[in-house]
Image (cartoon, rainbow, N blue to C red; front, side):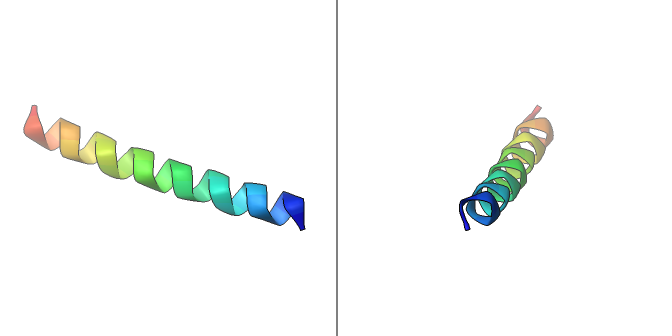
Length: 28
């Protein structure tokens, strides 16, 4: 359903953002 898609999309976005943040934090 559309709701499931949004949840998956949101989860992926959060995971990607955290990975990017971890990389940035490590660089600093």
